[in-house]
Amino acid sequence: MGHWWQEQTVYQVYPRSFNDSNHDGMGDIPGIIEKLDYLTALGIGVLWLSPVYKSPQKDNGYDIADYKDIDPLFGTMADMDQLIVEAEKRGIKIVMDLVINHNSDQHEWFQKSRQRIDPYTDYYIWRDGKDGGPPNNWTSFFAGEAWQYDDMRKQYYLHLFATEQPDLNYHNKAVIEEVKDIIKCWLDRGVHGFRCDVINIIFKSSLEDGKRQLVLKGLEHYLSQEGNHEILQELRRDVLDHYDCFTVGETVLVTPKMARDLCDPSRKELDMIFSFEHMEADQYFVKWFKRKFQKKVFFETLSKWQKELHWNANYFENHDQLRSVSRFGDDTRYWMESATMLATLLFSLKGTPFIYQGQEIGMTNFDFQSMDDIQDVESHNVYRFLGRFHLPKWLRWRMIFKSSRDNVRTPMQWSDSEYGGFSTVQPWLKVNSNYHTINVANQFHQEGTIWSYYQTLIHLRNNDQTLIYGDFEKMYIDKHVFIFRRYDEQEAYIIAVNFSTKKRTISYRGDVLISNYNTTRFNGVLQPYEAIILKG
Ligand code: NOJ
Image (tube, rainbow, N blue to C red; front, side):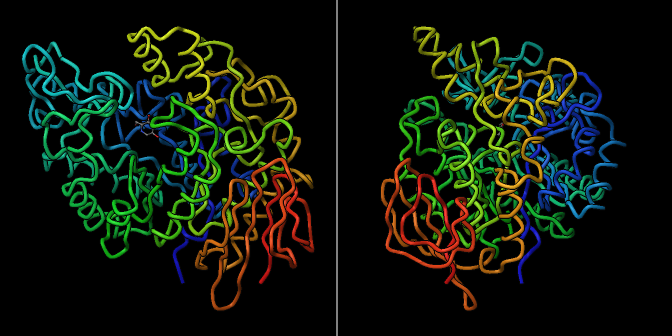
């Protein structure tokens, strides 16, 4: 009735932090192969691999220097081919990260472009400066100006992310042809789709100054432009449609209308998108300004997106966000309850569920001690940038500590042996010190654990057409409780979640399909952080 990518659960692997097989402190592809049986046991059908391409690793691989080669840090192309084959044997499809808004300043195209060597001269967005400064007032997602002067070419280039990540020029048809070739090459190798990095900002319609605004000046010239849609349609028509694959777009600052234009099936662009609005329920304006988690906003936002899109890519965690149990739950008093409650919510929304490594065992935010414990380029840029405004060190540290992406990037906690069983040597980023208690070995195949709850949920959803395809209807929302219905002609479920430390009474009763409190007959009282799916 639908597509395989609607029915499966996607598991995101952040390779450098997943499993280190060669004892260098860095996760690698053979390490992933070793853990495929683990993923099969969990019930995973699709594995999304964050970038493993050759890269100077300024942004942990999101700065690609060669799209057709594997970084030696992670292994070889032969390892990659083996991963694809071994995964396929277990019924797991591999999805790669496609980063085409920008690549690395070490990429051969950029090196040649700097020297004006054709055909690469116009592969990037180069301009002369203006009035002794950059060509326009645009700012970068990673803080500061979005332009960098290049001494060799004697021009500025645009970089919406780190300085070492120059943006590609999509007014140049040759760039689109290169991208098609890359996509084709990976599909021919046996991957089944792509998670497309910041895919709604690749086309810049003009390089005029941006309107006055605090951050992201220039946005109106590149967010979801018509040219962007044309490129996506072309990639789909000329390449993707000829394979059994899917695409999920990471779409920054997307509105429901923009999202529909990107993933309405009739438009033949993307299959689904990651929206961000529900992840903004604990911030003012940008993630560095945290506020108390606004549960009602979170519920209303999820509900709105369920209604607005025919299909969602549902997620509470990824390599850029925080750990959901620390962020939306209570990682001390109700660690188990809140982790399993969040899981229930995630798996009962309409759409493809995406989980991020470690989420299935309730890994928590990192216990950093100082900036020295942080590696992320974004965190360091922002820390430096805020220093320009004389913000005291303690305040900057506090902002970084609460929002840094390294919170989720700590090594996977496999066991309570040294370094969490991730490696035998000091890993590239410290292991969270709670690995002694929170680890796979403590939970794998053991009843009453977060891991086995995820396993049960995945199995349940995989085999339930109503949970997969049924319609969504909001029933009730308040400051703590979210209730909705999923239904089709055969079946109907009521899902109720309690995001609070107090009991809450609701006006539903009945037999329970699943509950994180093992309730079988529900009498109307939700326990702290309880989640239930009621039958009929
Ligand atoms: C989004 C990716 O998820 C993030 O990790 C990266 O830093 C930026 N795009 C730039 O590629």
